[in-house]
Length: 79
Image (cartoon, rainbow, N blue to C red; front, side, top):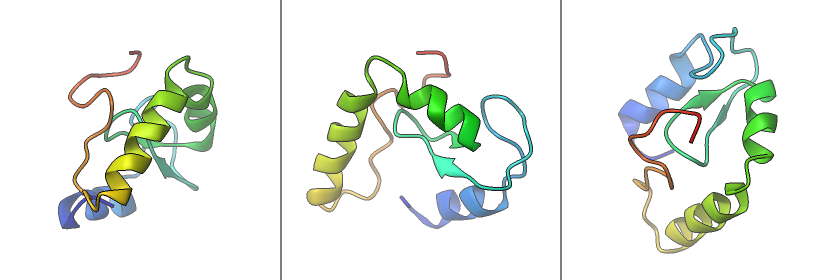
């Protein structure tokens, strides 16, 4: 998680940022700061730039940058 406010959003958000479905199991997007249901996570994984976003996030984590906003920061899905 990037910071306390985002942690709270991740844990308390009740609806998927993309489809609006109920969040029972959730994941953070690697593309931006969306909180995703598992169906939308699978759709994101099929995105042609997902691996690029995954790799970029990994490099930021290795550099101890916990505030990396994602490859498509500030943009709404679809990218």
